[in-house]
Length: 325
Image (cartoon, rainbow, N blue to C red; front, side, top):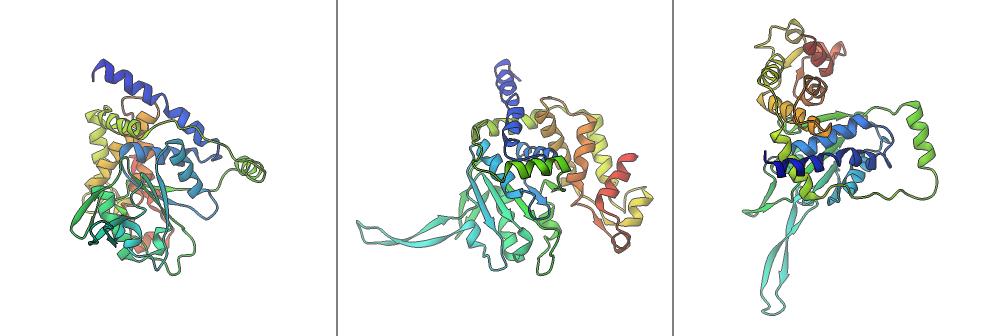
């Protein structure tokens, strides 16, 4: 890395604490969740956000977009939502000079830097699948034409863990395309008290723009240049392979798991560990990065059997057991 590039990257990395502080003006607590969303952004992936109603999921994403000066769109997923409502559709227009009619592609809300797919499990699989190409290829295909999505591009899908009647659980193939599966918990007593004080009066806090689109793209490039030792890569590989009942020596996994994580999990864990290093103003991955991010990376990539579900064993329990080894 050249000296000029290093100076530029150090300047960008020094802005990340200010970014988290700016988001904290509006969002009380939830520091770990905010960190994981930012890690997903730096790693160039997408995340699935799960939490009960009223935990400020939408406000959190909107606030982050505002502090980054990124175009933000929110789509409320409903049972009657169609793929065209997300990716866009063609409309018939007329050239006023020639009188000729032609079809013009009208871009949908997917054409934004940050897209909030709210309650993604409340829409049928056909509409859920409309996100697949966008998430993986960063483009939309309509009527044989390709339309590139803006960069940086981040999809944050939310789902509600309660009221599961009439929902459409995401298939495993689509779950695997989410870099992180983030779970929101209730705030602490003091944090909840602060929320009540700060949100029941007049006025709203104005946010400063900390990073531009191009600076985020530069940070994404930096993330891939972060150093990780061969020893840690071997540990990541061993951890991912140990989640598979057919290849693991763990009696815990053989007893509770139906199938384990694929190679994409290892790629995700290394990328996210690098992103966490950048977020903490480091240029090298440490073991703590792997241990902390193993949960959001693996929890949606491990399938439990009926025995585990009957005894309330969770995928986080499996990951915790594997990290002990």
